[in-house]
Length: 176
Image (cartoon, rainbow, N blue to C red; front, top):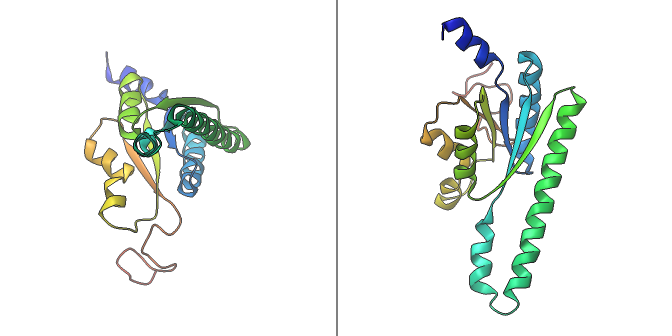
């Protein structure tokens, strides 16, 4: 393959955006829409049903556990479909073609598996405000994705209140 063919193939790759329905996701969706429009790319929206909370329910709810776990599964599925619907509606408003992908599992593993299964031009994720102790930082998916070092470029879009910069200042605290 020559370099022109490689470049043309890269130009056709969709953008992958990971969404979880939280407020920081809205900024990531807006950025995905802006980039998809300017690059003329479709978007694939990935939502991962994270079974993280189920590990606690396995330990806590012994009686009626099966019914409870089925309820948790239904809630996760409903939340996932609603999250993807909101993202698709937002992209559709801007005339952006999108496809929904819903996976189950640990988000880092599911996102990495998706990146390995298809070629993407870019992965976009939102970042929650960075407050809290070691536990929140340990669950910081954007940082974990960056540390994983995949070959797909990663764009981390900060949600509101993520930046320590005040309006009218730069990252160093200097006036604009």
